[in-house]
Image (tube, rainbow, N blue to C red; front, side, top):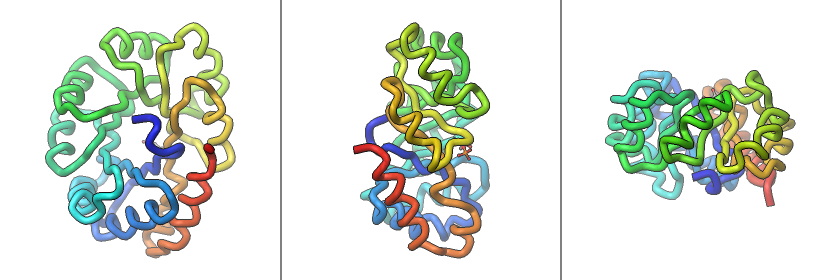
Amino acid sequence: MLDVVPVMPVVVIDDATRAVPLARALVAGGLPAIELTLRTPAALDAIRAIAAEVPEILVGAGTVVRPEQAKLAQEAGARFLVSPGATPALLDAMAGTGLPFLPGTSTVSEVLAVLEAGFTEMKFFPAEAAGGAAYLKAIASPVPDARFCPTGGITAATAAAYLALPNVGCVGGSWLAPADVVEAADWGRIEGLAGEAAGLRG
Ligand code: 3PG
């Protein structure tokens, strides 16, 4: 799950009709994955549209905060799930779908709890506010089994410092699909941002 793209575009979408051209622009830029956050009423429809019309992109659901959302997202076509935190019920629900998923963590104890539950890949959130790349670097030695997708406050300028760490597989961020650019349907701009991010690793 962490090795699909170096940068996971995290999208808050208000208008589901923008989803398909947005997904196509990301693919054209070299980023064949998209995380639609379940923060807006349009999110599940957006997942449904992308799953139906842009099969070449790996579409997932983010901001899964209630156990029942895991199944709803899967039914809409999500092929992976991401949560900002992890409770035992949320872990059970996400694991129960059989989909790959990234449970959110931000402390060492939370990381250990997710490892104890049997999962080694997780989100680190909110990355910048919770200690940033320095924090992940500091826990790589004591907790070597955990691998992360840090997300939250990361930008094009700070992504590379995370990607250089051995315990980071990818980073996530919303800078790839700024609301005003999506609103303006400037798909060329999205493709350009995706192209820059795609080149951040190898
Ligand atoms: C997320 O849900 O992963 C974050 O809200 C994305 O964080 P960003 O908007 O600061 O990139």
